[in-house]
Every structure is written in C-alpha cells, then in structure tokens.
Image (tube, rainbow, N blue to C red; front, side, top):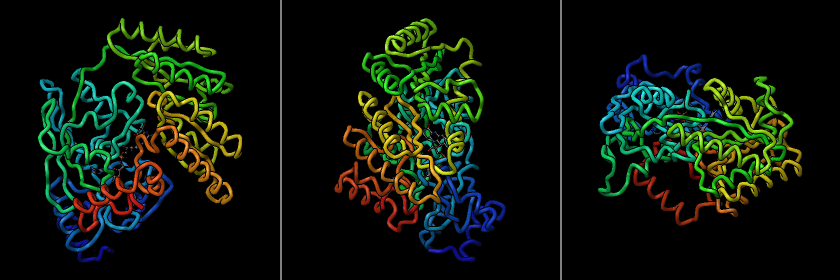
Length: 459
Ligand SMILES: Cc1cc2nc3c(=O)[nH]c(=O)nc-3n(C[C@H](O)[C@H](O)[C@H](O)COP(=O)(O)OP(=O)(O)OC[C@H]3O[C@@H](n4cnc5c(N)ncnc54)[C@H](O)[C@@H]3O)c2cc1C
C-alpha cells in the first residue's frame, strides 16, 4: 500500500501544494510520538476541514494507502505513528474554538485546539472544562478524545468521555457523520459518540466536537504531604477515598520521581522522602478550606512526616511544576523508558505499590512510580538503555508480571494512554477472546478496506 507520485499529486490538488510534503526532513518530524517508536510515513498532509479529509479518505480507499490521524504526537502508545507507512494527517489546522455557549454550558471546537488554550478560553467566561492531561499545554483536544485522556482532576470530575456530547467525524469510508446531541441529555439510538471516544483514531477522524462545560470552582487549595515510607502514602490515598472525601486531585510521586525532578529543576524537594502526595480540593471558599484542613489532619494521623498547604497560587504553581516535570526528568536516569499506566481499584493501591517496590529490589532495575493515585492510576516507568539486551528482557518480564498482577487485583492495563502498538500484545490479558473478536468486527464494519490507522490496538 505504498503511495505513488500520481496519488501524491491528487492529494496536493485536494489540500494545496503548501499543505503536504514527501520530503524526508518533513516526514522525520511526524515519524514519532512520546514513545521511542519511529516510523517514517510516505507523506504528511495538513488538511483544513472535514471536506478535504473526506476527499483524502475516499482517495485512500480507491488508491489503497493508509491514513494515520495525528494531533500533537504526545501519545504514549504509538497511536499516531505510521507503522505500515501511509499518509500522516496532521489535524492542527483545524484549530478553531467555534463557540462557547454560556447559556447552555457547551462549547463547539475543532480537534486541533490545544487543550490548555481551550481551558483558558472557557475560564474567561467563568466556565470549566475539567479533563486536564498533564500534556495539556501541547496535546490537542482531538488527541484527548481519541485516547479518552484522563489527568489529575479525574478523581472528582471524571475523564474526557464524560464531557463529550457529540462529534462530527469523517468515517474511514469518507462519509461525514454527526453523532450525539447538543443538549444536556439524549438517548436516541446507539451511542456512537462513546464508541468513537477512545477508539484511538481507528474508527473515524474527529473534525468537530460538542463539549460539556461546568461552572468554574470558586477556590482551589493545594497541599503536599511527605511520607517517610511509600506504603504509608499509598495507604493514605486508599483511606481518603474510603472516607468519602473527594479531592479533585491526588497525585503520587515516589522517591525515585522526587529525586529525578530535584536533580532536573532544583526546587528543594525532599529527596530523602519515601513518597509525596499532591492533593488539591476545590469548591466554595469555606468548603475548600474545611476539606483541606480535614485532609491535612488525616495525612498527619496516617503517618505523613510533614504537610504543607500552599498559601498562594505561586506556591501551588511550584508544586505543579515539579509534578509536570517528571516525564522529562526521568531521562536523567537513562536514555530509554518503558512507560505503563495501570489502574487498580483504589483500595488495592498499597498492594500494587508494594509489588512495584518488590520488583525494584528483585531486579535491580530503575522503576519510577508516579501518577494519578486518586484514580488508582499508577504510571510505572522502567528506565533503561535499549542497547542493553539483558536489561530490556528483564524489564519486559517486569511489565508482564505487573500486568498480570493488575488484572488479578481487578484493575486495567491502561487508564488513559490507550493500547496503540505498545500494549497490543497484552490486551488479551484483560479482554476476552469474544470481546476482542467483536471489536475487530466493528473495526471491519467501519473500515472495510482497513485504511485507517492500521496496526493499532489489535495484534
Ligand atoms: C509529558 C506527558 C504527559 C502526559 N500526561 C497525560 C495525562 O495526564 N493523561 C493522559 O490521558 N495522557 C497523558 N499523556 C499522553 C498524551 O498526551 C495524550 O494521550 C493526548 O491525549 C494525546 O494528544 P495528541 O494531540 O498529542 O495526540 P496524538 O499523540 O497525535 O494522537 C493520539 C491518538 O489520537 C489519534 N488522533 C489524533 N487526533 C485525532 C482526530 N482528530 N481524530 C481521530 N483520531 C485522532 C491518533 O491517531 C492517535 O491514535 C501525556 C503525554 C506526555 C508526553
């Protein structure tokens, strides 16, 4: 299914010569995502709207080439890389916030809008769009929807799918469809919107979305709790949930993540600590004040060695700077990483954290644990040098063991990063044969010629 010259000329005539390229140096810029996987596409194309995308998709079906939708390429599982070659369709020109409807608490936006830009724009109207992947300053709304992104605020507010009311989508056969509603509720027919959210760009290309907004909380309070022992921090997370307290965020950093961020940014973090929790509450001022005080007391009672409540927005920003720096700071340990985002029931977080500690001690590998602990979502990263074959073999054995343990605990092998290519071999650990077969049938129904984002999700 390679792209020949005459087909490329037809693509040029659809989008204009300035919006597509087959130059090696351009292709190289779209050959990667946030994994270490690199696959050079045959062409990179920047369409401006659904009409152009539909024409390209129809061409892909008739002239047989693959199409891979792409937002910012910050995905963690290889979803936007051209594993089998083809045309990478970069969605960043579709970047309009079409309308923020303050009467109905909804917004209409295109997929290339950067998530944090969208946050700031709706907040100007006193409204709030909660989904906030830590990549929000550079990932796109389209990528967030395609992956059903989570983020720190999911503890209280849920994930991306909870805020999507409707979609405009180009199907893999070229038709442009609209799904869902513009109203607060609606149950007419099958829920195609939910099917498409989290489908990793394999069932359709999102070209517009209707998003649900809520009121911006009046106050946000932020605190950190430092623990000598990682197990105590994990038990504290489970206990907060058990007591029915609902912070908007409970983020977890183990010692290895504290150390690498401190080496990277020199913020004065407690490098001798076993773990740190970053907890945030929001709501009316007096409610937030009372909740943060309860949490402070609870953390101390459960063994925190120190608790600090940020007095100003600037102090809170420093704590977030540390949390958001973990991903780049990890590379102070080693040039490569294996990055997983398992989720366990929140009462089982201490068991999982203990097992990760055991694996560290048993294998001698550098395993860094951090993540959205309030959801039971722990990102464990195995830092290694991919040239060291022995280390790589050991690391994949750890992944396998931790996936098995996750499923045994009643968890899931991916909370927000999706399956892409990196987790595809492991999906049968969690999803049954009949369910996988049904998913494959759906894929064939949507995409009979298999042109859209091939090689993803299924092995
Ligand atoms: C430092 C860092 C922190 C991160 N933190 C989080 C986090 O807290 N929570 C979280 O959930 N993720 C997180 N991620 C992962 C990643 O940022 C998210 O998956 C994000 O949603 C991807 O958006 P993107 O625009 O970069 O999409 P891409 O990586 O370009 O694409 C991701 C997938 O979406 C598909 N796609 C893109 N646009 C469309 C479209 N318009 N229509 C259909 N399919 C499309 C692609 O084909 C691909 O399968 C993080 C990544 C990094 C690097």
